Amino acid sequence: MLIPIVNIHDEIIAHKERSEIDYAKDIFRTASLWITNSKGDILLAQRKFDKKVDPGKWAEAVGGTVEGNDTYEETVIREAEEELGLTELRVQAGPKQLITTPCTYFTQWYTAVIDTEASGLRIQKEEIEQLAWIPRTQLELELEESPQKYIEAMPKIIALFP
Image 1 (cartoon, one colour):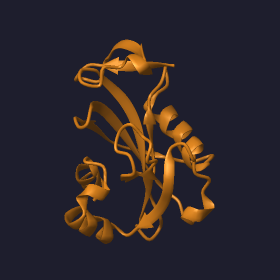
Image 2 (cartoon, helix red, strand yellow):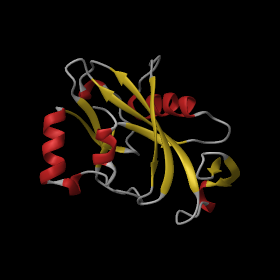
Image 3 (cartoon, helix red, strand yellow):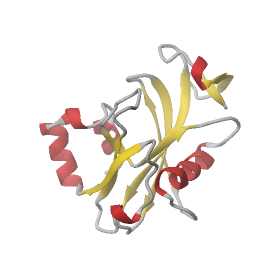
């Protein structure tokens, strides 16, 4: 599947096969979903230990690379179904973020509120080790005390969702 390569203004300038992306130079697009429940807890996913980037680290529950001619929203809807089994999900567009470590990409954020136990979600075994609901105050504390548990961008991500 071809991946859109963009410039610093998020304008498509090329398409490349995923295996041909130069992660030191190319900028690509991703879409992510910040999921909370009605109590304000945040759903996080632990990345598989065999992932090339950030293995075993905790991150947002849903995220994926934009492929082909898909929009950011089409991508986040597809990823929510693939990674968590969520169908007929209503998402709200949030901020767009340029992330520069460990590679450079735009993330279009979306938000959703669901009240499903983590154990009630169907996780994609190839992507996710485990899911957990975490209170925001606990996440903020852990980011101070044990930042290595989380992807490097997590402090910037949580700041987007006050």
